[in-house]
Length: 246
Image 1 (cartoon, helix red, strand yellow):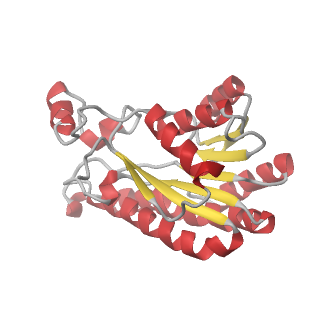
Image 2 (tube, helix red, strand yellow):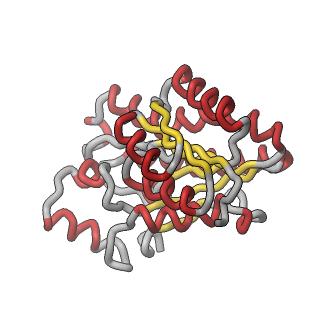
């Protein structure tokens, strides 16, 4: 029960890595908000883990405002924030990615971190404690070809994590990131372009441990970084990648 008595918001929590993190946090005693654009799926997971469901578009200020208001009204504070919601463009040469795709990638992967900071950080500063976890990617460390703007958005997130950590440390707020390698999530097909045995084999060949990551892998890393066990850890971007970035 490493998160007993703590409250946690997990964005993009209705599926994939976010669902794995939300389930683990709840199992470790946290009160968890399942925040996702898919309210039906969020409600189902919230019912499963005894959490709180919230429909949110993390790229819109008004939507994030309502999410923060729900947390404040229900709990009075937010101890943990996991910025997990993310998206990508399909594999393409950089000049062929449309402006709309570019804008969407940066709105969901980058602007969302700014918006949640605007509305959640003040609560953490008031409490003089808190843990923020940004789910970045190995793509921000070792970019994959034809995912240029996705790579760049995750590199932005890693830099933002370090900048946030330095600024918020005097207020008792820690900020870290995890860098997952490709995993069995709804985004996997988008990363690969097509899901065939041949394409999967090429992806797996880049991962020394020889398998895709799982939501449980991310949940284990997230639990450590957001728990009091990591009280001296801030500004870290932990690779959970089976050795891909070596």
